[in-house]
Length: 346
Image 1 (spheres, one colour):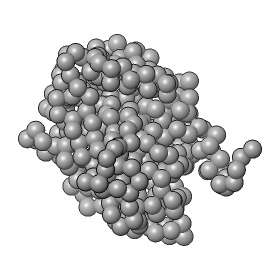
Image 2 (cartoon, one colour):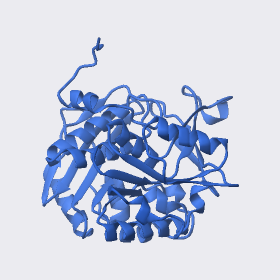
Image 3 (cartoon, helix red, strand yellow):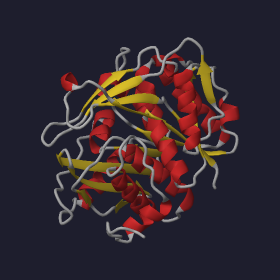
Image 4 (cartoon, one colour):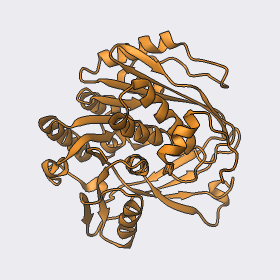
């Protein structure tokens, strides 16, 4: 187990419409816990990595269940704050069906996590024994206080020699406190060494028109030269960036997706194979699965192509798992990379 990977973010209670019902049809919801940075931490831990979550939870039975879930999946909780009189953020997912996309409704206002401010977290203590700190644009989108906490954490990481990882994670509906995503995120991204995002998220944050990902089957390939040029221009705006990742998804229908990823580092581009998923079980958390697998791979693989291959295979497997978490092992990911079939294993 390598140095610990510290993730910072909110744990949420997810309510999902059962079957293919619309919100106005439901009488009950399926419930589970999730949250982008939580999903990343659980993914790392599932591979045997040392993952720790920094967050705030309400000091009530729901908060206690969250702690139990994190520990159940092997995530360190020593830096979780329990706050009295606060609530747990929630979100509702109306599942996609064929041509109808999924809909997400957030209810995160006044959650325990949203009340965090600079000075409340001892980052020097948090970063003892840490190799990577991971934050995301969702953190910075919720309140000015949380954006300031991200900056505070990055400053501590810089001072202590901890690598900073960022997932742009742009969510239009979360930016409600009067500042734009571009205004807040770009200065923080410019202080990060490992950066993740979709082509649309890089375009939104940096203002660079991204190539369209239109691959519809495993026989099609992206124009690697076009993506290399784009990534070079994006990295040129991010002076500390050593590894720039882009995970692309073309949702042809709700259960037929094509996935591909690229890694730009040291002036050259690596491209993954295309994964065509013809029976998507749950697409929530697929990007988080990519990030979690990649952060694990950064610590355990020396070769950039091997890192990318591991992350994309892990991300593809998440499409087969209900809920937010990518509960797969290193051996399962490596088997998929080697071309394992879906035949029963006995």
